[in-house]
Length: 168
Image (cartoon, rainbow, N blue to C red):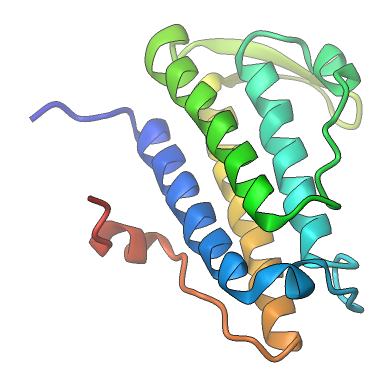
């Protein structure tokens, strides 16, 4: 049995967890998705927009663009779009990620990451992917809390749920 790089396995979990949560948001429709709320973000759509922008930012960085250049790339503001449109945008981005991670980069390569807020650090591309995954987990938790605050149940996106999920 060939084992996939752990970072790719975790990225696949990230995709599954986002898809699972986004499917729930589609069920609740756009009035819940765009509803203003006093919480960690002003609306769920703002959280999802932030997640998309960050996922896109790290795609560029993992592709070899410097952090300063990646921060200058025009960000697609997504918070006013429908959840259905956002799901398609994430899918397109994740298709590009899959090609990048499976065919174009060495995930064990160590590069210098130079962030404006923390400075320079040597890190592997796989560590960057792991950061992306944990960032997504953090914000899926925000969304779950916001849904509960609005009186709606969320869905489970724990890693163990992914392990046992029927993903066929």
